[in-house]
Image 1: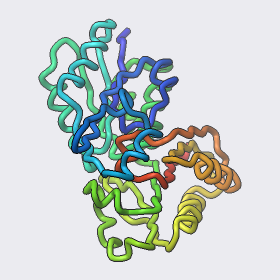
Image 2: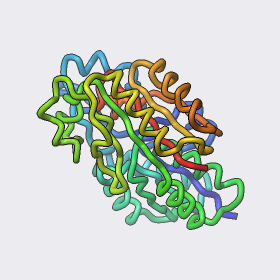
Image 3: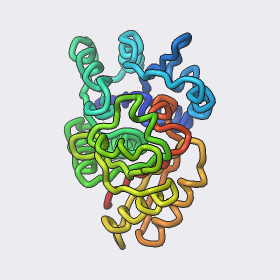
Length: 280
């Protein structure tokens, strides 16, 4: 039997409990202020980032090479023969390609890299799907094929009160056409099949954007059996509201709610809610 490690980056919104329970190796992305640098999930949490970005919007940065190698070393030292890296969309970050390059040069561990073409709560769902697949197979390609199947069926979207953070971070993608109405416009932003952002709908005001997001999910998945994963920045009640509304229209078989990781909070700001859904 193969012993397979799960490796991811810190954009996956995993709780500390899940990381510990399944021994997931998390490679931290970096948050760089003018006078200080943090490692996401190591020396800064999601709740701690928002007071800081009121004073300065920092840069997010790729992980250190030595942190990538450390994750591989830990998997190998535990007797793993293989590892699956389930990473943030290559369309939104250079992280995936960097880790893929380091993996190609690493010896003693068969490292398979899966580009989720997504992030946050959707990336979380794919990680959990891989863990569930371990119960029935140790065939890495079968597991990756399962992830591809789920990703193909998945819808992931979010909304923010203020687009400033996404614009400053250069992650606006196909949402760029909305910038002219920055002060009031609250678009619902979808992560498309290419793993980049595009506008799903446009509304005026954050509360209307939340309702529009719920309606988008209702339209796509009405009466279906679904798995959902929710994320939020500073207000969990928003995620709970979305969950409650979705349950009116869909048969929710599983649901996770986790705060967005600090490195993503840099790009979303303190008012954000997001969801990933796929039909079971």
